[in-house]
Length: 319
Image (cartoon, rainbow, N blue to C red; front, side, top):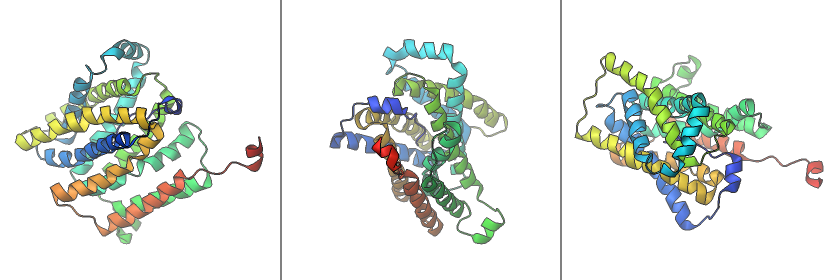
């Protein structure tokens, strides 16, 4: 899943862009590993409650990566001393709430639908950036956002116009929408935070913050009777989500940003939706619904419109 820090534009310009076929292959492998998290979450669901799964994944991934970023420990500790609340808040929004609500949603809906809805988050990011970062929001972006929103409504209403008019939505899809919104807010706030750390050390700090803020939810699940009953399948799923689909995936994303630049590495996020649908078909026996295809079509059109850059005025060009 794509709860990854996004490099600030200044960092993106400074990245050494060496767009080789190997760099693209590495980036693609990272999104494939990320898509596998959706499948593993469905497998682990019957044995691990969603918030407990969220805590376990974040904590284990953080512990795996801490030794990898050892040269940055000094700067990481300094950041924690000066801006602890900022790190904690971003970890809560981008990792605890984004992943926790996704895992809750996956208990009610299929992985394919979840992957499509999560593709809506870049459009949400564009809209939120207008209010939080005062980034310009042109006509095409507004139109694109509304079209993508229509696609999301088609999916959460399962293509039923009557249910849409009565505001009767599937609970699982609404949780996924909340996850996409959390990711969009997190992306915008992280751009504004400017922590001044390299990407991977930032990931580790936010993983730790996410684990800390998800712990109360895991304790609440335990006290409410939702106990963990891990067996072999659940253990393997958790191991995948923490290591290949967690620590390794975050590390690969960091390398792909360095090789391709933040813009190109981030745009490859849309491959995750394709990979989720393919893996869900192979391992879970899921198939695309008509409303998934219709909603995805709206979302793709919205994304394309939102991504189009408006031409500067002639006077600005001349200058």
